[in-house]
Length: 61
Image (tube, rainbow, N blue to C red):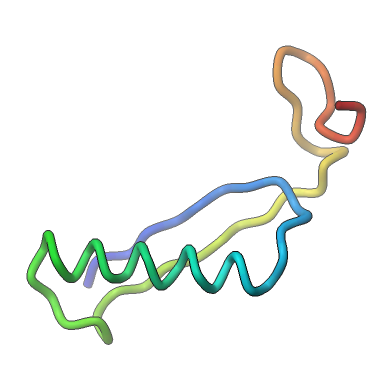
C-alpha cells in the first residue's frame, strides 16, 4: 500500500487539495501498477506562523 505524505503551509482550498490528491493517486496507479483503493495520500498542513523559509515566517511573507 503506497502512502504519500505532503507537507504544506495552510491556506489552500479544499478543492485544490482534493484535485492534488487525485492527481497523485493517478500517478501512483500509473507508475506502480496498484489499484486506486490501495493508495493513501495525506496532506499535513502547518500554520503559517509555524513554518519559515530563510528564517522568515510564512506568515510574514
